[in-house]
Length: 308
Image (cartoon, rainbow, N blue to C red; front, side, top):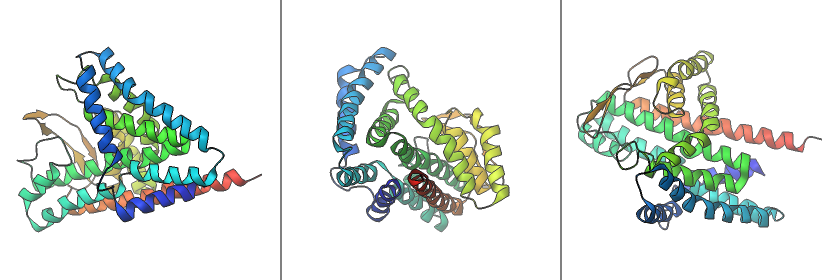
């Protein structure tokens, strides 16, 4: 059933993309905004309380659903498929990336910069074509881990509660996990919990990106880049993931970037060529092949589960 549920959820996402109206994550964002307005203080304790106010009710509801539906296989499968479909962002990730790649290939740099600005928080106005391609590829690789594979991992490990809590914490981190004056302390708990929940999935994605290359030397290069370069990145999970992806694609990503008008020093990740518009498309294809790798693992888990 695991393989069937994952396959159908991914098929729904691939076919329809994100729900156009009444997306649950939009509603979650509004709840998070309300909690922030009510509980915000520039302290870690306030941030932890706010996080608990958001997470605990959803944890209780998801645990109740898991318990109630545990003996109703068909209903549980349907609810799981819908939950995963809402939580996974496979098609939308590729759509955003290709909306940058298309004008970049045509030489429409200003349009590519504008569309990239919808994906990343860094300043895009003065980016070169190679920098636009690098930033987009980094976003594809990092968000592939967060929005696809970590969701699948937590469903495989903890069922519906795993998916719900992971996606809620990941959304909290996206909204509060900045090292700005406002969120440095208030967003600390959300950022650290997101790091914890992503630690294992990110290491599995590192291996998966290598396997998805279908090349032994690129597999080795992906793992080598993740091991030697990933630990120097500011994020303990994004660094290894992006380094592995860059190694798998045989390109160099990273490097200094400008955030809110200030240059931020960042190490280089990967090895090989400078990124171009084609690198973005190659990164999307790598994500597709990695999805197949994870489905194959799910199928294998299902087979092993039926063995006497």
